[in-house]
Length: 430
Image (tube, rainbow, N blue to C red; front, side, top):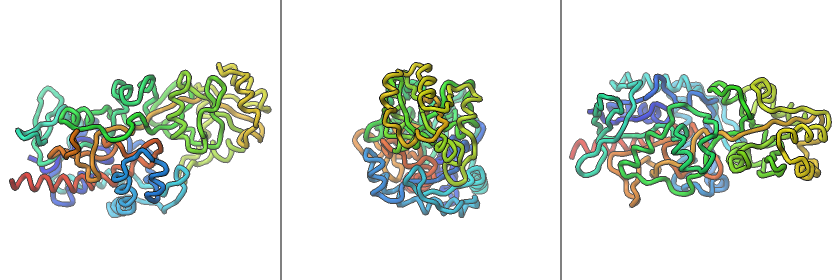
């Protein structure tokens, strides 16, 4: 028997496992792939969130206030835990995504430190081990999990913590949660995030997170593409859509671009064909499209890479000629001319540029319902004994805005581990 069984070796799962190990707990981590880190290992390592509750409520009016408060209040301590673990943590900056506070963390080093801490404390990390279902006792409490392979091995635990990274890799779950055409979006995350935690929790009686479940985090990506692989995720992201003009195939603007690419990305899914065109001038190209989108970010010509990989990209010395090129992609020419007649500030300095874009999903805002300490809740709002969750497996925190990804694991992983160990200790003594 293990004190804490962690399902998923991503950022949330490993943050929880390392915290529990530091408390002297026996920990077992099940990771169905052959590598730790999940989507966090593919990220730029930017740990960030809203600077205060007021900002959180403004950006995520649909978000759970209890979870939002815990996230904002726990940010600084989470960053310090990463630093104390021995990972490099950068200086703090403001303005991430237009409003947030942020640090860059060496996620690979942090994952290695967490792994070492678990193993040094006598814990186990099992790779290629996929949990198929939760095991419950006669009173309905969760007391372990059963592997999905032919062995159906049962692992008994004082508590189980789900940190499987969301369900963006399962087309049926994505369509059910987000709506038609959502399942066709590019998946901008780790391939292992296929909703294992959500399915197991639901089967055990868990409720879905509060608020609308059809929001999701992702970014606009050029269209079409000859390839799509993890090392394309960051350099192909069109962060600079905030400074440009987005139109749909009807030639109409459909987003308030200044709110951010991650917001426009959600709107793009609802447009005809789930496609849009991003237009901008040379000033935007030089100041944003080929510049680092945030401190320590990549310096890459996002437009040139899109063109290299087969996306529809156009350049023209005049706006009239650019519009003619874009019309050739199936965009209504008359409506486009009318839309751009005001000549926005982002379309004043020649030459002019355009790229067709499509939405992508990194993780959905939906997931299981849990409190700020990671206790998974049933339909009656009461905790399901022995079951906890953290990271992208928990729904209801964000929407429609986005206030962080990696930070969810860094803040809520240890909180959930702490509560899980209390449950494990009390259960062992009963």
